[in-house]
Length: 348
Image (cartoon, rainbow, N blue to C red; front, side, top):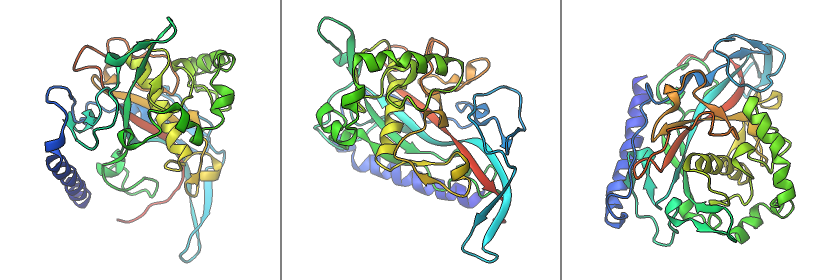
């Protein structure tokens, strides 16, 4: 436990040094707000449930959304050491492994406590302040997004006896300010050419089915062009065509960001029978393999019942009162991904 804590503090110190080194290029003071997430009070720990062995649910209450698990409780995986196989239990749970934040101001990091890093001067401004009217219709908005590696179970030393956790330290993994595709629908087509087929009104209308599914359970994975009740997946960048509210827009950006990470081979598959022995390359995101929980500006742990939700679920069910002017218009989400793993005890 102590060596993990030391590793985390050392990595966090590196981030602090980076912030200090770039402070001279920071954006204007008073425009970036945030708070470091408290792992005790801000994290929806019940989102890890259900915990399964094979298809058997060990935690039937409280009821949490889940996707299908492999049926056999026993798993056998090849290894590079004698006896060349590992025999273990096939366990399933939802691993808190990433954070995604959605921000109005470029280079603002609310997940790091509200610091501003002057990485670039060319990133466009974002958010509700820059909304425009498209053809006399709906409001549009634009946001930047950042992805953090945040393997909480490993950092806190929880379940340390099992070999089913992502190891490593808290780190900044992706910033859209440095991504030329994030503000351009045209260059985004290079990564998502199928958008020509699905970024249309008829395709958007079919997303009603995905919206209904996400309201009562998990979204429909086959409808990859849909982001449930939040909108459509394309363009897979920071432009929100119909801005209803900051919470709804940020939920859409989170879904698009996860979709983008998979398409760029920066995210892998940890769920399903094929991933029991190890993660697999997955250029197509499985929407039902992710759940999210808001941790800033307010956290969902105060909501009775489920304090996290699948991708695509309308914020009407969980987002009321979660945003407020000025300090409450940037958003940080803890991401839980489904993990099916062949677990065995490892002596640390």
